[in-house]
Each structure stands twice: as structure tokens, then as C-alpha cells.
Length: 442
Image (cartoon, rainbow, N blue to C red):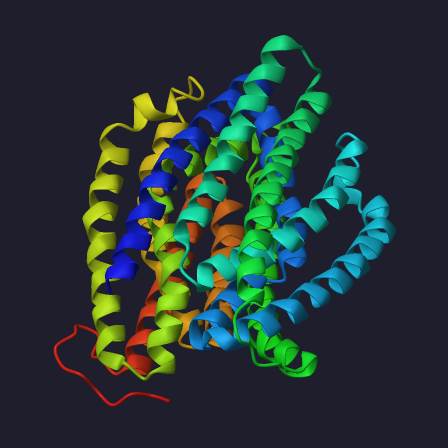
């Protein structure tokens, strides 16, 4: 348990600094792009993140799970096969991107160079994912923390320098924002690959057991495919969400420009503030996947129950004060971005959405660790369907509009958290209120 707390503490501290930097990044973008520009920027990000999900193929999760469950002698052969697979996969994905991206209409309203940036991003993410997976599996969380911090600080530095030196039209300003994102990913790629190959040289000198490429691919894909499917579904829903919200609001009487502005306030301001504490949840997730995988492989259910209790307690400790602060200080917090009377209301109304996600994020990692990846996907699909139906029905009504959108989001977050929690309790053999152990579900 010591390594769990050490890794979590390190990631939380560095992630806190990184989130502070991310907060300043969004402030710089808000000041430079304005409400409409921020709405356009936030609308294209889900599409780019969808490409990132495909490029990573969730190798950080599958590799870290393999490393945590297997002895050291299997690591070298697995990594060699994983690298070969990544090379072939990246080549295929780049070719597909070159053929498909030019005809996607979603990029039509943006600078044409953005398509090229997305293609450049693919190999950077793919190869970084192998290194991330290895370091997560051996619980070298310091390297993961440095990589995460580098991404934020490099992007902020580039944004501040470029925006202060030059003035851009809106489409070029959005292009520059995305260029800084790709530039930060390049720096992370260089750091992770350099560190990984230094570690790889040490592994080559240890005794190793040869594995077949087929067995390694089967092991990795058994985790990567359903996890990628879950992430793809997640990315698709986020890519659809801006257009769904816009359509619902326009049906409620909003103009197209007004709908984009309100979406920008929701995601660019309220989400930036509300998800600020989520760095703790993501830090817990990074450490939980290998820790839970190792404990479940040993059938150490006492440790799994203890981990679940500690995760819930830690989430209560920071989650409840966080949403209280958001409610009390909504006006000054949102006015750091825009001088808007609407954004504080959105932040206050979204407190259930943020709080339930603080619980759901580490629970999702817990489910992956115990092998319930398909369940995680089904939970997300059902909660998203319910959320979208509520958003369409309530958001398109004139008397609800954005309030209806927020009600749908809150309901979806509550539903996914409850499904995650009930499934974990059943699998590890504990009652919902931890009163007594129950029979484990294998």
C-alpha cells in the first residue's frame, strides 16, 4: 500500500501544479479568442481527442496491466512485440487519416492546416503510449508526472509568447492554440521516448522469457480493444455533444451564434473551473490500474476492499469542499475568464456533474483493474443515452434551454457513478455500505 500512496501523492502534487497551469492556459485562450472563438476551439477539441484515442489504442492501460500482473522476465519480450505492433498500427492509421481527414466536413470552418496538425499528432501519441504504459506498470510515477507537467507548461509558455508578440485573426488564433498543443505533445514524446530507451537497455541485460507475438497481441488487445471502444464511445459522445447542444438551444429559440457562446461559457469556463480538482481523480486512476490489477491477479480481496474504501474517503475529503467553494465563489471565479452573469449560474448548477465524476473516474480505473472493461463501456453507453435524451427533450424547451442541458448532464453523471460502484462491490465481495463482506463474483 505504501507504493500506492507514494505514487498517488506524487501525481497529485504535480497534477495540482499542472492544473494551475491549465487554468492559466484557458484564461489566455479566453482572453485571446473571445466567447465565440472559445466555443469554436472547444467544439473542435473533442474531434482531435478522438484521433488521440485511436492513436493511443489504450496501450498505456493494457501494457501497464500486463506489466503489473507478470514477472520481470516477461517484460522484455512483451515490449518488443508491443513496439512492433505500434509501428505497424501507426503506419496504417496515418494512411487512413491522410485519406479521410480531407473529406471530413467538421474541419471546413477551421484553418486548413489543422488537418495536418492532427496527422502529425498520431505517431507522437502512439509511441508515447508504449512508454507511458511501461512506466505506469512498474509504478515509476515520477516520469508520468513529469510528462504530464511538461505538456501544460510548454503549451502555456508557447501561448503567452506567441499571443503577446503577434496579433491574429480568429481562425489563425485557433490554429496557433492547436499548434501549441501539438508542440507540447512533441516535447513530452521526446522526454518519454528518451527515458524509455534508457530503461529498455537495462531490461535487455536481465534474464528473459520469450513470448510469441500472437500471445502478446492477444493479451494486449483483450484489454486495449474494449478500453479503446469505451474511449471511442466517450470521444464520439463528446464530439456530438456540441452540435446536439447547439441544435437543442436553437430549437429553444437561441440563434446559432448565441448557442455557440453559451456552449463556450459552459465548457470553456464552468468545466475549466469545475473539473479543476479532477486532477486528484486522474492521479488516483493512474496508480489504481496497476495496483488493482496486481491485487486481483493474486485474489487479494481484502486489499481491494481497502483500496475502494480509501478511494471513496479521499474523494469525499476533496470533492465536497470543492463543490462548496464553487458555489460560494462562483462569481469571482468565472469573472477571471469572462465578465458574464450567466457563467456563475452554470457553475453552481453543475456541482452534481463534477462531484459524481470525481467518484466515477477512479471507479472506472478500478473496474479496468479487475477486468470489467466491457461493463465500464456499457455503463457509459447507458448513462450517455439517458443524458442525451434528457438534453434533447429539456434543452429544446424554451422554459428550460441551458438548464435542461445541465439537468441531463447531472443525471448522466449520477447514473454512471452508481453503476460503477454497484458493479465493483459485487465483484470484490462487499456490501454497498461496507457493513459485511459478501460472496465474490468471479
